[in-house]
Length: 174
Image (cartoon, rainbow, N blue to C red; front, side):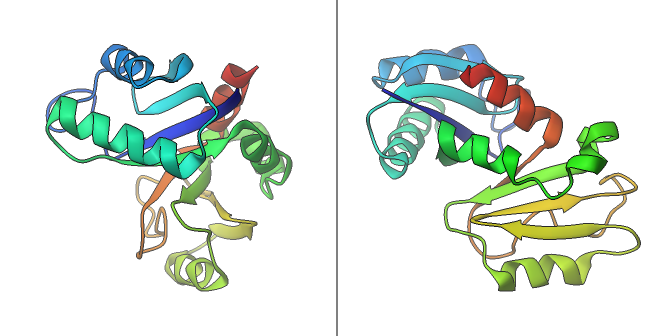
């Protein structure tokens, strides 16, 4: 079986759109996925399956909506893809001291040069963005709280995780 990472977009662990991680693990297991684990309470799921990533996305989206009563977008990657993201991180130097300021942005479709240009247009000061394969990497030199730089392209379904989370999810993969 192949290890996969499933990232839920736009959930909240308390209040509106609440998806408790214990319930998410149980839901994924009952949907037929193996060795299900989560990392922090923000929708990071690691699982085993012989299904294709798009099929895993659809299966999880349908199961989540049936169980919780609202739609949640899910973006899935294989463990090999995840490892490649870490190897191709253009902000590894910055991430060594500020892993929460470096973000990986992935979507249901591959990133394009136009997506990158749109994000760069909203960047200011020392903020930077780079495209590597199907992903975008963002560096918020002064933190993301007050930044005007977008966390992802305007069109499509995208989700972002900081470098600390990306590394921890990789560790869950073994």
